[in-house]
Length: 465
Image (cartoon, rainbow, N blue to C red; front, top):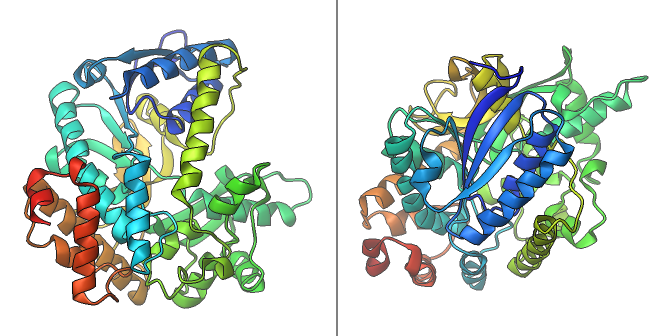
């Protein structure tokens, strides 16, 4: 890779460039990074939001450690993609009003959801909305930048990363999620507790990851060569009743902590159930199991159901702050986030290997799951691309749960891409959060949810409900 003044040049197309969250984190990470010289092209269906973020991004030049990244908004997807070496996809499939229907309609049937963006009835509907959107983006990448590396940040991660690979076989795409950071932070805290002067962070913690997105587990944990799995098991057992909250996750916003925080009680319980530590956050983990496990009484398990009204309020606050920043009325600071994206980009552009947990098609890295299933394991990023690492096998009982979800996600993807409405109701009703409902109620729930989001669904699917 050619370098310019020791900086690695890279052209990044950011689809969903008006993002109020992930785009801003990438800007701050690029400001801290001293290795890349990035040109970032922002595209969003809301052009004004992309314009705002471009103005913010260019302001980060004042606090950049290395070559300041350059930002520009674009009016067309194709224009942003042409010549891109990295493509980042971070879109909201629909609106928060659509997500409100995903949560509120199932609640009338006694179906609770803590997040509603991955599995369960909410994740199912979100996938049906998003698959056509992601498919269009994947085909545009095939036309405009077929050799680019593509990072998907959009949920439901497994289904949508699968959509990219389905419509563009050979695409160099991975799904990126930070949930595994949670167990790495906990282990870093354990390592610091027993060290005289060390100051470990989650980046010092190595884990072997197995599972599917938001339902991930680890069977190896170490800090600089020291096996931490026995210590984690002991800590989990000691805190099974009281739970534990990472101090670094506690903010000054008590309402935010209430709706997004947890005490890891679900994680600790899953270790007891299956013998393998859970890596993702409790709010996501809980949705992969029948509601009677955790969602019927979330408070006793140390987490809350996140209401859409809070999400709307939080989004409005973020937008107001971003508009201030775009006008130059608020200071900006380069601060490295917990995300691994800039390190992954550096590895791909420079050839220096970097290991990270990501979502990729299964080619044998997890035993017992079908080839092509989108799984989450570690992979090596380097000049050779993204190569998944063989991660091993899951406990039989856990494998069956994961296989059930993975097969449903694969079948849902195929049905939406082909507008095959026949299997959709049965797939919907087979989810662990729905399958306890009588068939007539499950069908009624599906029909009402499709009607609420029909404006964003393929016409054949909307009409058939």
